[in-house]
Amino acid sequence: MTKVLFQKGLFEETQGEPALIGSKCGSCGQVLFPVKSVCLNCMSADLESIRLRRDGILYTYTTVYMASEHFPPPYTVGWIELPEGIRIFSQIRGWQENPLKIGMDMRLYIETLWRDEDNEVIGYVFKPVIGET
Ligand SMILES: [Zn+2]
Image 1 (spheres, rainbow, N blue to C red):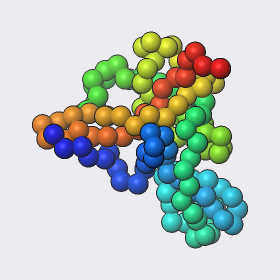
Image 2: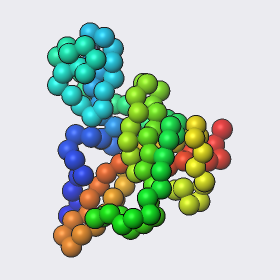
Image 3: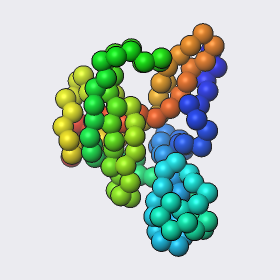
């Protein structure tokens, strides 16, 4: 079984702290995800790669009851709003244990998305943050 990344350059994990990698525009300050070569707001090419914040809030979500190629139903996807002011589309896990509510705190995790005969595909998911102050 080989671990492979869902897509290169989307995230990194340093000292156990996962983070999505985005771009910040040096001209207008816009934050983008995933990494871009040109700012979608002002078209500047003055972009630097930054680690995005790990915690955000649940903006909206939906539960899918039809099978997809890799995910048995039901599974949940949604948009997470980060403090940087951008929204990230992600699979959401942990919702069976902790019912989702719009606006609740969510946290990024790096996990196995699915396995096939040869590979374990690693990607990012968000889960509800429960029981922390
Ligand atoms: Zn810009």
